[in-house]
Image (cartoon, rainbow, N blue to C red; front, side, top):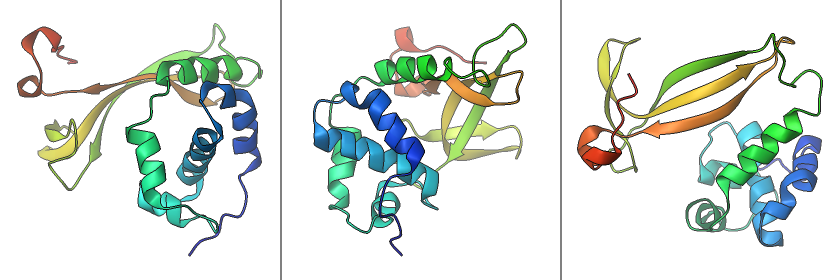
Length: 167
């Protein structure tokens, strides 16, 4: 049931901080919808996020923004990290730690880009998943956040020269 009538305060702050990284108002709106949906929607897919809004556009608009519109992910991440440095509880310090995490995100279908069969050491079985390497910063305050990430691709899905074994 649709329940979102306005963006949360944190999303409105993010729009002020990062809005200039997007080309126009519709892109900024999709950015705000996506952030809000990631925080609120039970399922984190485009259709579920879109259904959470009282005044929603067709879900294909958000989907196109995520998959076809050119916006600089690295610039957004760099700005996000700069933003986090302004607050004492999330600022880098000599007592902070960088934790590396190799995470498998389960999927049902095999036709999703970069999805493949990967060995899950925790479950001791192969599963269909995305394989992510994530670097998290853990602050001395206990706050933590991702600082960088990579999607790992199976050897048979890329050129030999591009392949890096993450183990």
